[in-house]
Length: 628
Image (tube, rainbow, N blue to C red; front, side, top):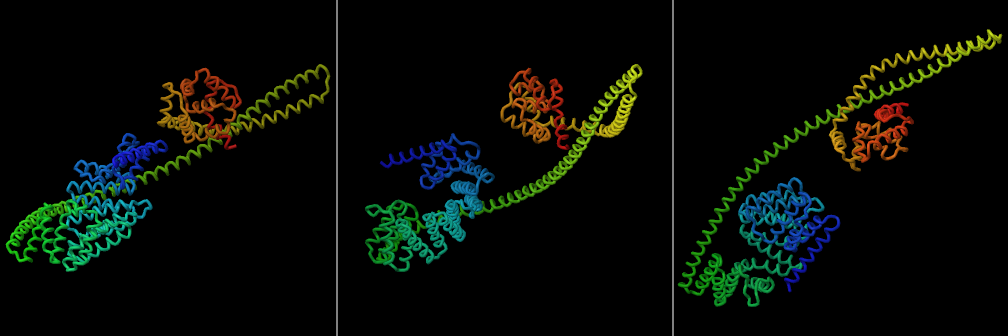
């Protein structure tokens, strides 16, 4: 029944993950679901992650998937190998550059776990310290629960390295962040670990205070089973102090509520040393048969060195107290032999611990060298950044100067255009006046001849002569004005030549832009332009030909979309064939539209070639309109 229920729950979770992924992003929702199941159901979290492996989009999602999967197998008590260490190091390096504070903390925590399983305690401690430093404890989304795990695992390694003061400090951090993360159970477990450190520091009163406080706090939050387990440690302290009544009370609670005993009163495997404690209790109240029973049970069920040593030592104490020297000597010798074995085992462990401390010192030296290299790299980065800022500032100044010169050139070009227009108007007016003068002269001659032959009045001839004189004066005035304008135009023609050269340079620079080259290549190859291409062309013209864009914006009301697009392509010097390719039309259509386009813009009917010339001069026309 249980297996069916677990299977149903797992299937349901997988279905929820798949359905959630059909909306705003399937893979991220699967990762969120796996993360929410990580602490309560790591097996289900692993199943969800394995089901979503093929749907990771982008490197960051793949890395996050790998990080969560490594966390899931860690919570399933997987023993990590050297391959896991390399994988965890890769993840730590990646999230150190691109991850959030919580992701960095988790990555370095898992790196510490892999190092711990690989026997690299110093490197594991260093990784845990880095994980703790990466956590942003003032952020509202800080994963305090994960930070509690970091300090708890660090405390365990420090205990194994006999660094009990450091262990207590780490446990204080674990307790604090456990409560901040609303994880009361792990906070209490971290608090309970302090008993082991106090025991190794020979502080029995602190051991007793920790165990009793932890038991009371566990009862207050409804963890009665865990509360009962806290009372096993103080039993021996009460026996040593002769307080058998309190020892008996704690023993009863431990046996009834801890969950370690079966219906027959047999303790679960691995906790057989309790029989030694119970034997000491019966020995202290002089119930020797019960004491012997539990000491022998310790020998029979506990096969490791510590259990054998404890059982033999208990029997030696019993037979000594019951005046059986031979049996006491027998078990004392056996206890002595077991004690030697325990000592040898502990000595071997101490050698390994000292080697770890040596490795840790060496690792600290390597870490210090790495920090020095990091500082050097950072200094190089700062110097490079300063140089880049200086170059950028210089570029801005040059750009500012260039725009100022361009503005001055545009003003001169506008003034020149005004003079040229005025010159042309005066020239036209002069031509008209000369035409009128010729007409009046011809009429005057005709009238004079008519008067000579027909005896017409002198009055009409005088009026014609006065009109002729007036026209002569107007012609003289216009000739003087034309001469003055011609002198001014001569000055601006010289500037116009320089401006033409500059304009040619600007057009050449325009054609050197990679976007422009790409546009020419694409249309020459016969490709039509997409909506994104037209959007890019408008952006390019706004950046580099703003006067043209302003003119088109003011005069495009009568233009069709094809005419507007064709005008932009003509201004960019595209050939008629390339324009036809870009618009997806034939060449004859391009010829007709160019003429109608220019007629709408300028009100003139010209050839296709002349239409192109007018479009290419739109910038100058717009400049003239702005000046007016």
